Amino acid sequence: MKIKTKHLPYEQVIALKRPKHRKPLRPLFLLQLVIRVLSIFDLAPTKFTYATHGMERLSKKEPCLILMNHSSFIDLKIASRIFFPKRYGIVCTTDGFVGKSWLMRLLGCIPTQKFVSDVTLIRDMEHLLKKKKTSVLMFPEAGYSFDGRATPLPRKMGVLLKRLNVPVVSVITQGAFTRDPLYNCLQKRKVQVRADVTYLLTPEDIRSKSVAELDKILDDAFSFDNFAWQQENSVVIDEPFRADGLNRVLYRCPHCGKEGKMEGKGTKLSCRNCGKIYVLTELGYLQALDGQTAFTHIPNWYEWERGQVRNELENGVYRLETPVDIGVLVDYKALYMVGSGTLTHNEQGFHLTGCNGALDYTQGPLSSYTLNCDYYWYEIGDVICIGNQDALYYCFPKGSGDVVAKTRLAAEELYKLKKYRRAGNPVTA
View 1 (tube, rainbow, N blue to C red):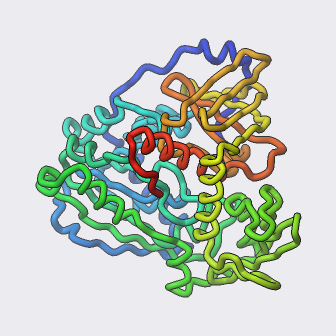
View 2 (spheres, rainbow, N blue to C red):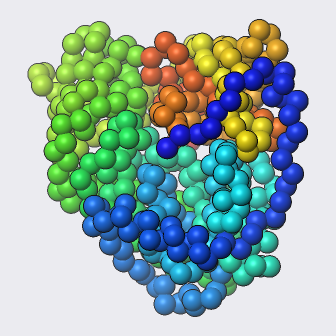
View 3 (spheres, rainbow, N blue to C red):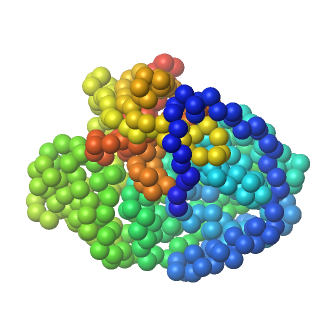
């Protein structure tokens, strides 16, 4: 899948007229039918199945909030398979509207920006749920998982639930990540996919519980580990490319400590600095070819990297500075490629400069609890995205090695350090 791009000077792009807000439409049934038919062909190789839990309590015409984990590009087709012919709008990112905003609107989609405060989003969701009597599908993680576990959920989701006051249904998939992990260069594996669909909360539950209690219920529902699931269920991944791109997630060698020297290729993950080689087994374990195995479980390695980043932040030595190609999103017509620049990240947050001095954007560490970033985004490249309601800046690092995962970890840990220490609380994971 690609996105429409256009090359324009930054000054011209930033002066473009922003799209006018429009209330979401009730999805067109004919288009939902088309998606349902197309999903048959994409889901057939996965032998998709699902189980329901308590869904008999939700009437066919009753609108609800559907919260689904975000694992792969087939998530929307899974939702179509489960809920058709129920009408539902979809909360999606603004980049999904580029070049096809008319189609997305007819599908009932609600545009929003990842990890950017958007007060109109709540009103748009209320409009569909209350005025149009239409359900809403939302991916509360917003970003895809890097290591197969849930990405952080926004705090005080319970406030949103209380304001909407509609039944909440959760959809948690197993196998979707394993079939097509984000780091693996869009190469699909032969894996069976299933989902659990659960009536999670009634409106009465929402009214009677505190925001903290509702957040805890969502955290528990979105607690999963796809690599552990693979191992516990003996799911064999024997494709010869299963470790391709794994260095994007496991970017730091636990033996020599070097970053940017890891290489995932074929079935092996190797360090070009010290020569250590790991094999990614058919059951998703890591195993050293010789000597000590530092980590057998990919999420454990990733958490170790998080700890290393936190140490750098606490010791005042963390810093990212990388040359980038820059794309800017200000409307739904195109991603505007405006030239090159430099992206810096440190204790003060992000600083992006470029376009011959015309671009100078800063973003503080408390602007978001996590970071919008992706691998091989729309087949352009690995990306770090920052910005605000006025413009989003898509930064494609060049020649700096695997910096995306570390930058996300740093943004998350820096947010915790700044927020909790400012409140006089201990920093928690």
